[in-house]
Amino acid sequence: MPAIDPHEVEFTAIRAQGPGGQIVNKVSCAVHARFDIAASSLPQHVKERLLALRDARVTREGVLVLKAQGSRSLEQNKEDALRRLQELVDQAAFVPVVRRPTRPTRGSQVRRVDAKVRSGKIKALRGKVTE
Image (cartoon, rainbow, N blue to C red; front, top):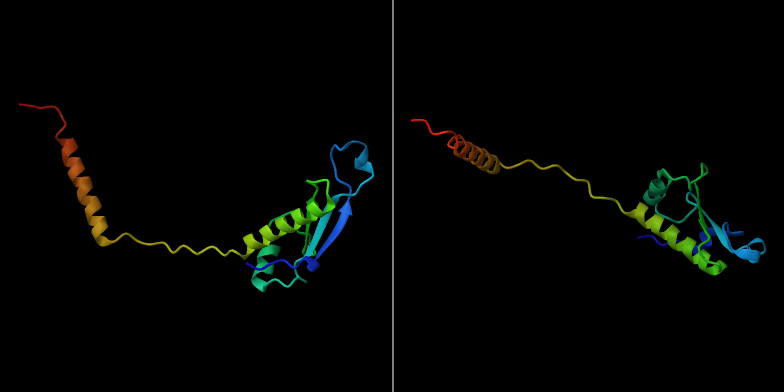
């Protein structure tokens, strides 16, 4: 999996939303992490898969914007944003194996039909006994 270079991520400190008391209006501890996908050092196929994501966090210019505000610490929010960005890149780097549909063998088809015929004969014998 390709690793994210932290120097390619631009961090901006912003004020966090939600409750926090008097300090909430004074301290900018939330983080906007902006990652330019096209200008990054990621492999081309990973860039294409990231840009193809139907995600509101990817802008029209191809910049991925993550907001981290889970902690009161600016450094912890930066680490959280980097971790989430790395998870997104890892998901984009994973290429699922294409499933090729298989066909049942002739022997398995014959065995299945024989079992159905046998089951049908047993059920036919369950009827009322007539003399």
